[in-house]
Length: 258
Image (tube, rainbow, N blue to C red; front, top):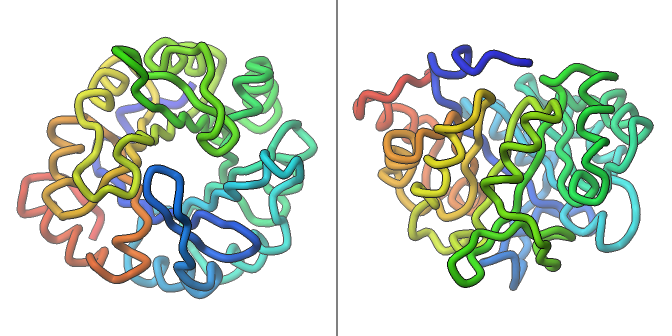
């Protein structure tokens, strides 16, 4: 079990490459996707710009019933020198091993973890818990935050908070929490939900969905108790520079690696 105190010294800023048909895309509430640039070029740019990590999500791999684009992963890995998390279509130890050999440092699973929760423990046992990130795509339905699978297309019967606790118990090393309600809106992260999950977890929680201003990042660290914050479009379209963001956060009293 990884120790969460390691992540508490500095908070992390993580750009995300959502990949469809080999291209970086970005939408709003997981819909209306638009082209956001070449993933290899973006990966190299973010590594040079001071990103703490990089996340690659092949967002249609599960829906299209295929595996993650390993060759593209290899190309991106060759131009970056920061931790690299890759997800999309991973359903077995063999799939994860292919991504590890292609240059991934961590693998993210979502739909496959919901379908087969034992996979979390299998991956953790084979590669170590620090290798296993479980992504949660959540949307509020009525009064309940509900886990969704298949790129946010399919609601499940799982309560988000309970599922977060279960995946930690099964051996996950990190949680990537994406609020579908906030995704792409640039209205701020889901700080309340992030805080609930972070305060109960002994593993790092990455907040995703809703970043629009530098203050939103400060909020999710201070109010949401997140260990890391992930964003896409504001970085892809150069609305916020990572170095400027990290300097701002440091002035707000948030520990950053500059």
